[in-house]
Image (cartoon, rainbow, N blue to C red):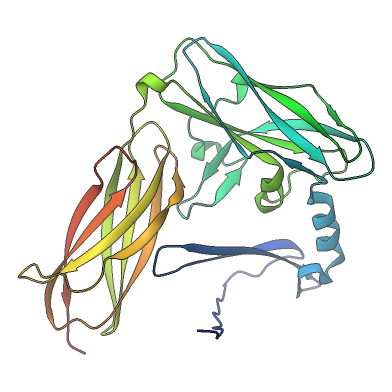
Length: 307
């Protein structure tokens, strides 16, 4: 407690001069995700962190939104062939009138839960970009004032499950195609679904075990969304001996905010500290993905060996 720990990571690829982003993720014992993204640049082969780089300073100034969104997520329930509209408010923090335009993009998530805007087409899940329009275009925000943008969804005659798109709001001074981390603050994620055909279902697709030391082991748990609607993954691992005695407190991972898209897998490396006598044990992995559904359960036998 109260101390710092340094982690080092070494890459094997030489980077060309340019602007880069370091992403770091740690997960606490109770399952809380701690993450950060740190910009740096390489100039003449030397790494320059943070705002020490003029290029990064210009990038951050271009991407820092002079306005805010009242929400970053809108959920539309709609019938096949239906049309519906919702609104959000944008607030201008500057003393000048802002002209804000909307850019619609696809989005996805990787196995670590990181959002990707404009992903590789093979990673796009059930897009609805062509169904969505934004008005007015552009939206004029008065100095130190606010305005409303209307989001309209016109669904096709046949829909099943849940569909996704994102709206990035920007001014003429905003840099184009910035790294995702710089665009999230001014991005609205839109979910469109037909409520009668939603299937919430997740499964534990695989479990593996890594005996790091006599006092530490790690489980790698992959959770797959096999339904047609997003879910949230929150799990725990219980360790039992042959007599089915619980060996330690359940180990939590994930959280009620860990968003998982349909047809996607999310991986967790779950550290399991504490000594175990040599022998065979059973790990019971439970993942809760919906308040109204029973958790997904998987059992995994492993051997603890003496040092």
